[in-house]
Image (cartoon, rainbow, N blue to C red; front, top):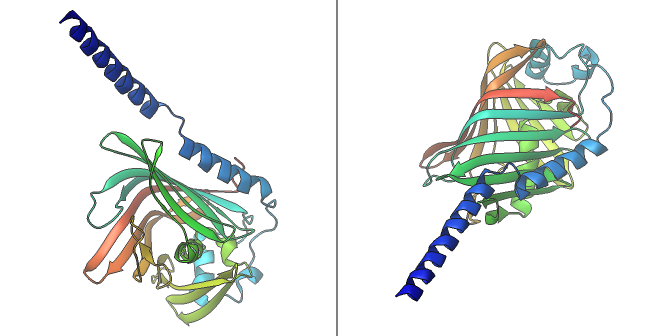
Length: 287
């Protein structure tokens, strides 16, 4: 009996140590996923060109009328052009798929001008267990990876559909990073006073969408058919996608939206899978 009791005590001690070690690991600020994100962003920042020039009316003269008015309304004319953008979403409701519960996440992204590239980090937890993700588009390759407990990959999506999804997401965000909207790889077509079509072409791939502006010339949405829905099991379907923004605020003389939603327009109904608030945008970030 004494031997059995010792064995049980040893087992109990080992389990306790494993639980304690796991909790310490979960609560450490370090994670391999965050380290990878830092490495990717540091590489992009290191190779980006220095900002050059000032936005002027000649830069926007050939853009559709509502886009020109947007530049003027937001206060970009007369300000320095930017090479990158950092966006913090401090309060986001996020849904992985229609049958999954909402997660509260923090989301930080970097977008770059020299080539249309973006890298984003998802930071959250599921039932107290860390959940992290990297959403990236670099060198023409789109990818989405989800990791739980800092160590176990839940899903990792790549392929032609992800490449195009990453490219069109760069396009959707180009008016938040307006120097991107002026690059040669983006072309514009005026539709009417409140709509403009944009097409981005890079790495042999093209994607298009329509920007909508309200009567106050604020950009309110971007809609495209070029961003396929891919679930966590890798199943793909063609679904209309929109990015919807609002609540414009002026920061250092520049107006930008502080709320952003991403919406899948499924046949069964719309799914707002990303509902971000308290958005903070910074330009020409060097670290």
